[in-house]
Figure 1 (cartoon, helix red, strand yellow):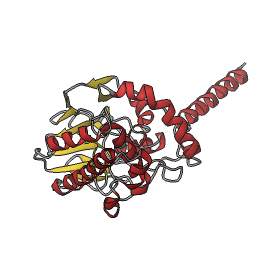
Figure 2 (cartoon, helix red, strand yellow):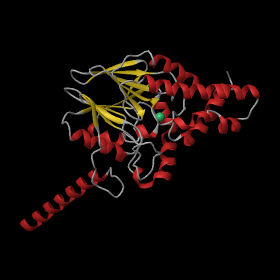
Figure 3 (spheres, helix red, strand yellow):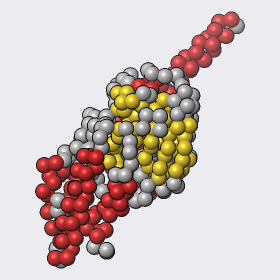
Figure 4 (cartoon, protein in one colour):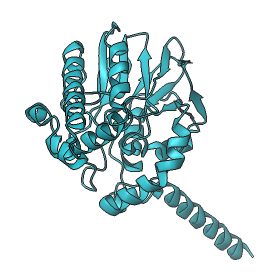
Length: 319
Ligand SMILES: [Zn+2]
């Protein structure tokens, strides 16, 4: 009897071991079951950024191509974008755990693109409030499955545990999040880079997270509206901030140069496209020719410029 009891108890312990291992294994980085903390830099007091590399998402880079990070208040942590795979998100979470025991209360997505949202699943266990633009749930519903399918084909096993996690809290204009002695101001923008762009301003340090409303070095990607983006840029240009975390590229303290470079590219693209439309050129001509003079100024130019030209052509044709 005693033996049987021990045996059953042993089975129970074994079961717990397996259950523990299974939940720990839910999110992995490929074959690597140990999650290495992401390399983050404290760009201002309590503001941490993991800078993405300039590349397309691959199995090898774990989708870690966007700038992601977190802000630490007195009572809680807010994550701003979660990266390009559940693995990328889990690595950010490990970087947070290495710095604070405070709970992760908010996970903010700046927009729907996979390199910014694919890490959401890594934070589900923390039960945070997921926050996004009021149009983000619809964008996720329309594109999420396609994003997963297309990227799984290219990235393979690294996306096995990645899933789409929509926001439970949405922003239609402005929203204040209090982390304890520290407020974040979230602003929902009109259609620009996408139709669901959200920026995050940390009042304490004057740090503005633009999401992909601002690209530095990496060519801007037009997935919303070329003319809308130029209008939103006009608003951003009037803002005084201490530093900016762009969606891609280095954190900068003086952002006027970055804004001007991006404006120059978008204006070049728009004026070339308007000229071609007036001349009766085809969309494929525009895709091959528009804004080519900007090529030396941007990384990944050939990966996105013709797509930008195609999107802009379809938009400006109806002006
Ligand atoms: Zn984007």
